[in-house]
Image (cartoon, rainbow, N blue to C red; front, side, top):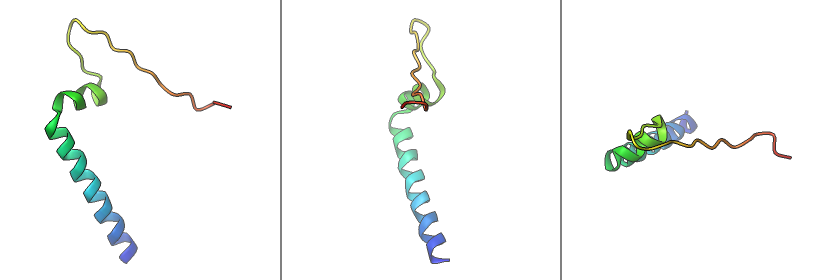
Length: 53
């Protein structure tokens, strides 16, 4: 039970830090998470391949 308590406290800390980052820079978050852009901009999405040998 103590391990679960520690895990959830860490998750709360991570979530709070992410929330603070979002509140500081909402435009960056919208662009990165939801691929939002202005009318005169193009978006390029690069995905890493999982099959690298």
